[in-house]
Image (cartoon, rainbow, N blue to C red):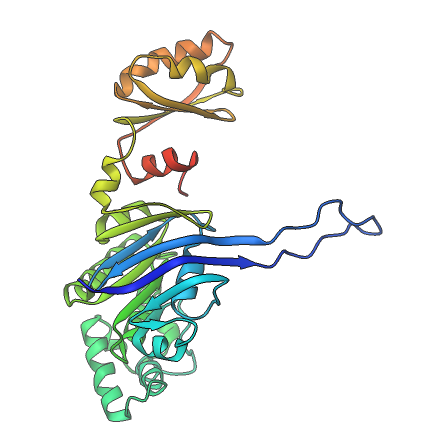
Length: 329
């Protein structure tokens, strides 16, 4: 299977933010450092694949999509998209891709169908052909009845479907979606999932970023887990979940710092790992909830009182926690 996208040692460094001065005070003692948004990212996305990038806000997902869609210039490394270099052949890349932004940005002075026709004209599609494609896309995406209405009359989910239609008007080889379901209600989110599944079934290559675990799990052929600009894991959702340590993540919240309890928790039978973050104790246990009484006893023996207990079965989130020490959201 040929590659739709390849990145090699992709790197993006943003300039250091300006130093802040207090009113009338001296300059700060530390000079702000440049921000490394991506650090040697290597990815390959196959033709026809629905590929996801999973990570929290600020992980580097949007920067990655920005580079692959030519909106953000690289600081190092190389990216090839649809057979063209994103730096030296940026115009070629733009003709071969469609982009659905994180937040809908249609021209609100135009009708729904006019948004599609004018977008297609940017890529040299003749008006008659653009009108035909627009009508077909609106029908396929279930908003044909809104054809001649204004964009502001569309719901959030309908606007996002309009953005997908707009991205498809010039028949691109690859579609990029940056956090496509942020802000949508559950019904609209499920509707958008179905739209993406249909596009995938047609053989489209789709790249999407998300911080919703269920979304990544349900939709994607493969997932790249990214945090702080680094690739932490890459595989199918089922194989990634199989890498999650232990059978159960047990989170116990105490009323004070859990540092004195961590070593005792690690020593318990059936515990594969334990870590403390403030008042939260996280334990990966092969014994599941059976370990809870021992954790409570370990805390009480050190003067701590339990405030809350939460159990999670192996999931993408438990894998993310094991890799980073913090939750995805």
